[in-house]
Image 1 (spheres, one colour):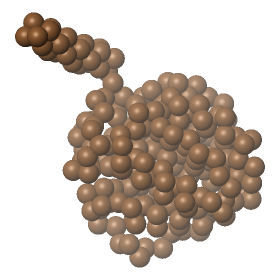
Image 2: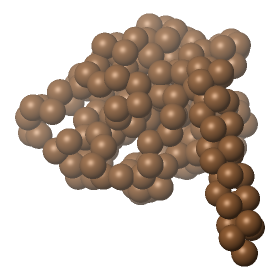
Image 3: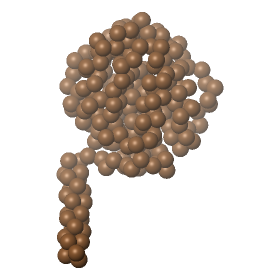
Image 4: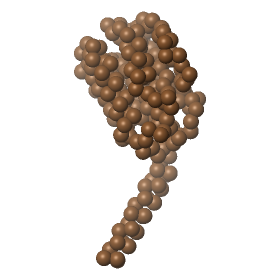
Length: 218
């Protein structure tokens, strides 16, 4: 029995060494254990392009803000970025944000450059406090899935290298139309994907936030 126990200990040590070498060689961030002692930073990337004209994006923005502020602890933080042809920060990372601050009125217009929006989100994460591995970073992309084609493998990979996981929410009167493209981004981003009609958005977002704050995203 002593010999078997020693062999098992040796096998476990070898396995842990192999995992460490694998992460180091790939340049991938270590996944933090699901602990509420760590800070979680959310980035909401909200599509406000012309194809979203049938969606009340101002209401969606307001629901994002209210849902996040109900769910997050004082140690957590979030930012909201709207994007069409060019991205723009609507609410910045700031733990001292006044809870009663009104959100701007948004009018959907323009084309959809998701590539530029994801690169911008990467920059916003990098400029926020915290090093890779010291906090959890999660991006939630909200769109109807109607955007220009681009090589999402490279950009999603860049976000993953700085510790960002990505989930997507396809919101449309018929969310099945654009859900496949968003599902692919979520799969590569290590997150989840949901499809929802506008009336069910708030509950879907709350579930996504709760899942991120609980078990670690794989």
